[in-house]
Length: 296
Image (cartoon, rainbow, N blue to C red; front, top):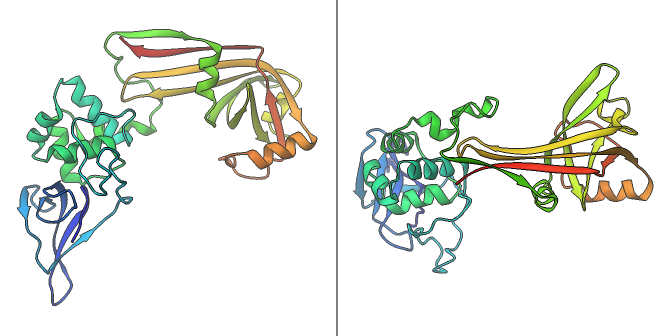
């Protein structure tokens, strides 16, 4: 039997196959993932040392563990001293951020939450979906709520959280702005129309220093062609109270012929809105500016 941190230990009846008990593996005692395990039982929330018998099996709900880059051994527990950036998931980032806000070490939080320090390192560093009992324990240890750790406010408009301690506003140079925009994503197109100013989200790609996006004839985003348009991209990190914003202003032009065919072939993804969007529009900025909110 081999397990990874975060796997589920399921104890079943050897005769009927019915599940009797299940728990989350929150601590390993051997680098190869062999028993025994520290298991947090879902029915009690308690952590016990378990030597699985023949009526137990491992159920994994995660991607296979990657080889540990420092040891080269598959399945090796994460080194608690490692603190990579960025963490492996939004949940892990919220946990790590809250821990630092409280000026607590991983060992202190793990002790408060009743889990192995290696498991806390796993949660902070790798994509993970911990059990409700684990989230409850971590929330109590970090003096917050499970909803905050799980990002329950993800559907809210960004920005209602508290400002970071000692925030600083930085002006970004053109090269930094382009670097931030370079990863394709969603931006906002702002332009004047017959019905007044409009701002619409569009999927985009950055080719060199030019923003390109797909659209369809007769749509508002297609009417940008031949006009001066503004294109804005940002990233808001609610958990960290940080973020950046880039604004690009330039003429919108229709891309045709072989250039349009090449864009279609190179497009990293289809527009989220779906539908047939055969037109390509480009915006090469005449002006580009950006700002970043960070902390001292």
